[in-house]
Length: 114
Ligand code: 5GP
Ligand code: ZN
Image (cartoon, rainbow, N blue to C red; front, side):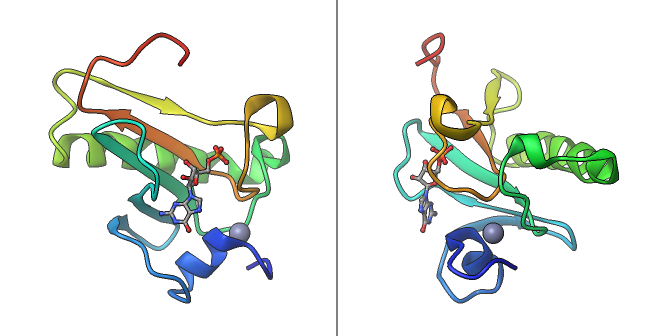
């Protein structure tokens, strides 16, 4: 838990979110400003500021996020036609919230590197 981190507050239910998946390690919820018909944020409950802060200790956790993405995509009906899983890393990657998260995007044909 990092003070002032908006995603930690969502994890701790101090802020509301439309949660679509939760387990001991991972939370997934609808993005507040969707850019596709399906736009889900998948986050570890552990506060990792950005992708460069991932270590060997987090390998299982990152794998679980990948498996959760597959499961959520199936549940939301975007698995068959496909989807995109995106991490924006730091300033040049367009990261705004510094709690590691992956955007699960789908529901339409996405433009290449929008
Ligand atoms: P980034 O640019 O850091 O990869 O993406 C951050 C994402 O978090 C943005 O798509 C933004 O719309 C979303 N976001 C920011 N604050 C909130 C919030 O309080 N609730 C939800 N559900 N999404 C948020
Ligand atoms: Zn956090």
